[in-house]
Length: 93
Length: 117
Picture (cartoon, chains in turn blue, orange):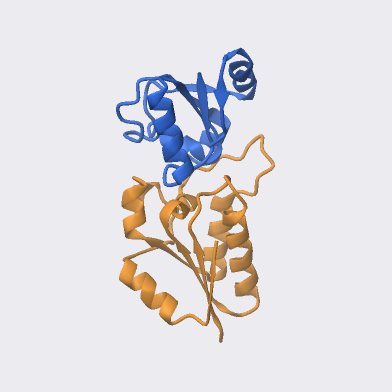
């Protein structure tokens, strides 16, 4: 299962999305302002896989040093692949 | 002289707020107003160095802020929001002013018009 997040961490929708992903043991995909969740310490204790749309990270000036190490950076084609192959996709919060 | 204050609360690129705030700040300064651009909450990310728009059609907000500063817009960043956003001073463009929340209130109290984005 995949939860797509487009709002920044201070948005209610985004906080709810992370909670849903946690509760359902889902993976997360961060796009647009959701990429700010990739900053160190923002997703503490989240066990699923976190995907990050790299163009949106680069656009906002988040350097590789700013973000968590084990986050998987993807491009648009990868994003489409993820959405097509996942059995259940929810988003974008 | 009219004092125009513009508050930007949203991070850049996720929505039109940041580019609209920059556009109105530039508009105000060219109309001979005194313009304050106040970045709070996620809006502080607009002053982050290293925004890379290559391959996209976006207006570079970092460059827009630099143009504002160059033309005389006073750009302020609220200290508390920097902390919440984990944004260090070294990662900010130069020419911005770091202020406290009470200083921000004072600026607004002395403004003729305040726009919020």
